[in-house]
Each structure stands twice: as C-alpha cells, then as structure tokens.
Amino acid sequence: MSEAEQIRVVIVDDHPMVREIIALACNERASLQVVGQAGDGWEALEKCELLHPDVVVLDLGLPGLSGFDVLLRLREQFPSTRVLIVSGRDDRAAVFESVRLGADGYLEKTGSVDEIAAAVEAVGQGTKVFSVDHRRSVHVELGDLIRRSREAASLAARLTRREREILDLLAWGLSTRLMASRLGVSERTAEAHTRSLYRKLGVRSGVQAVHRAAEMKLVKLVGSGQVGRLNR
Image (cartoon, rainbow, N blue to C red; front, side, top):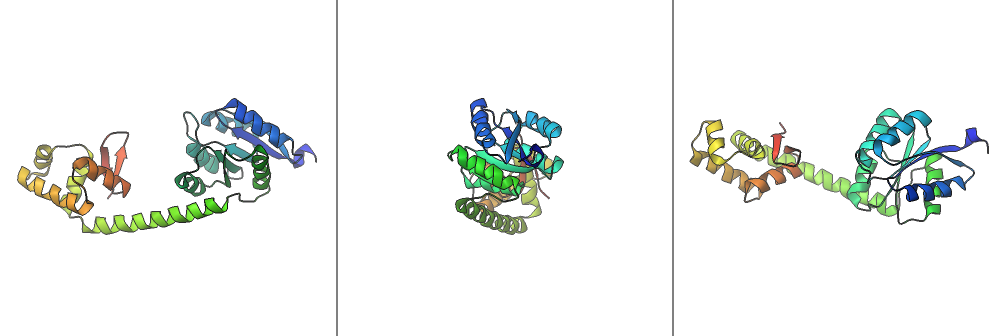
C-alpha cells in the first residue's frame, strides 16, 4: 500500500509512553501511518493544521485545553478529520458528550493496543466505533436529558416573575436584605418569595437553590462561585 493510500494518524495524549505504544501498534498495520503526536490540546490543533491527518486519536484528560474542547474545535476547523476517543474515562456522561460533539468512536484505555489500532483503521475507513454498552449509555443519557429538560420547562412555567428575580439575585450571592433593597420590597416579603422558591425547587437553602437551578439549566454559573445569570 502506498503512502498516499494510507490513513494518516495523529495521536494526542499527555503521556509520551501511551502515545508511543499506540503509535507502534498503528504503524504495524500497512493501512496506517502515524504522522504526528501531541501532548496537549493546543499542540494537537497545531499538528492537525500542519499535517492534515485522516484520524486523530484523542485522550480526554489533557492539560490546558480539554479533550472535549479539542474535539469541538476539530469538528469546526477540520470537519473531514475523523476522531477516535481513547480515554481512561468510562462513564456514560463522557461517552454521551463525545458523541454529541461529533466523535467517530470511543474506546477505554483498558482495551489492548491491537484493539485501538483496529479501531483507528475502522474509523479511518468511515466506520463508527462504539460498543453496545456505549450505545446503551448514549440512549440512557439522552433519555435523562429529555426528562431533565421537561422538568426544567415545567418548573420554569410555575415560577412567578418575583421568584425568578429572587433566583437571579441568589445566583449573584445577595443576602435577603440586599435582595429586598434591590427589589424595593420589605425583607419579610423577600423571605416569603424565597421560601416559595425553595418549596418549588425542593431545597432548603440559597446554595442548594442555585445548584438545583443550575442542574436544570435555569441559571448559569460563572466560574466556581455562585455568580450567574438567570436564563430568560
């Protein structure tokens, strides 16, 4: 098989030994040619810009730019490049997010290097590589997402305008006194609206309310603190 017919591969993992082992396994197959390696997300994008690989073998646990961020940028910048996720994560949320962002396959690192090389070859030939368990995980996660979306829509419809304002201010970390001042109401009135909001959210504190609302996509947290903005 000529070089022009080979599947060009870039391997992205922050562990050099892992990259070398996968590279050796791939290069033992006549159909595969490893043309580059990268140890972080930014380097991966640079290598793809320079080398135009057919397949990127991508780890999710990268320093700096995460594997998910790299996958998203690859789909935007190099839509014809196929991506095989090879990760130490085996949770269904990681599989679902990889599928959602456009991965062409997903393998755990517990698999043999021969399995990884075979998967690279299959992905390079246009085959989607997901196990039965992965497909089941995606279906379960999608079902959960639909359920959560319906719950959020139902809850949002039951919140009053004032409760929405209270939730917004809680997300910014304001006290009851400051919320009352901001809304132009008494502290007792602000407390009443807050208690009503807690009942509807099924929580007992402002912190719980904000995190519950964030889980339901009713409020967006910024950074690691309780600072956010209510989704209108």
